[in-house]
Length: 512
Image (tube, rainbow, N blue to C red):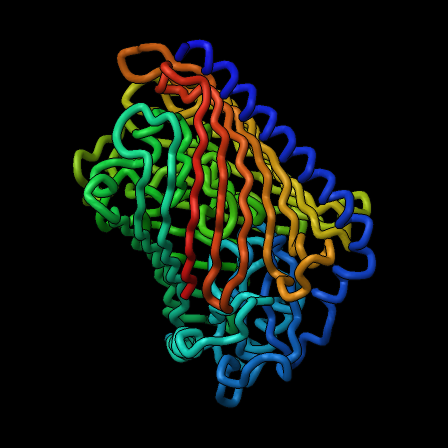
């Protein structure tokens, strides 16, 4: 009896999956048809005296100040000229933001300590190497709460001494079907504090230096969640809950000195560097907070992107349409331990990235095309690999973007010897379908990833794993989002007793 039911369950899940897939593309077609007249209004306006923000596709949103509560606007002589949005990682800085930053630096002296203006950087490097002073995101369902005012005021005040930061917190509840072991319902609180403290600017912005750091924490909610994780309980290769680290408690992925040269065309980091903060960025799929939640949608599992270890990261953007960077790391320290613990030169990695970032590709709008060669050693043979990271808006006035990550690497240095991931993101789907006009900044995403894991130490069987993920993000307040998410997993790599599993998640995100 039990055996006869398994194929029926699997077939039912596949029918649900492909029905959802068909509905998703039907929705895209409907939104594309009506987008010619509706999308442009969201991103047009006069940026000189307006609140600048980015939407879920990395496009600039210009909001007139008379539509924003005065308590959320900057005070002081700089006015709106001193307001800068949090960057959209993995795309060029919007011209409106770039012009505002340039205008703040025109009258600065040749040398300044703790300057209250961003370091001048080239357009793509700026999106990865600095933060804004604005926690607010556009189009919330609730215009403002007292907490939003306090959060935003703190960011403006700390920015006056050169300190910018992103404080992201989540509360996540996840339910798992067909677990291999442990509980089927888990919960966790996570914290991710990333900061840039601008120490000096010299020669009118020709060079600048700042401290870059990141602190993360995970706290399980309930007895089971303090010792278990969705990944281990399901026996999957990919992590269905990307914010859920294998290390409970605090950890320090990055603490480094960051230096810009030649007017921001060159940037270098040295210290403990989390290479995933700079390499493999993608504005559509690069965070488990507000985008996709599966770890393979956040970063390629083919690339050996080191954290917690001594490293150097070099970046160069000689032309607005081209950049190159490389991350060099050594050591095998794990999360929560000092970088010199068990240090060994036998474990190292060198990951490169060459990117093409045109403003327009065949009339579709901006795109980013990255090639990522790498070579590494993990206390064994030296091996290499190659990956690609792509993203493309599907029309200047179409609220849809496509992304893809593809790669293959050596079995001794890559977690996945081969991985293929792709998907679509839709900006404000309910508004463009005419369902709820009051949600101009929600987002819908659908992605699929196929992974072939590297053999485990000592050998043993593994199998390729496929994940289909559908997620939705709603902007509740200017600093709070709600993110329901569902994942269908076929052939969990380390759970041979089941053919498929389902993951249901609900995540609340607080972005300060």
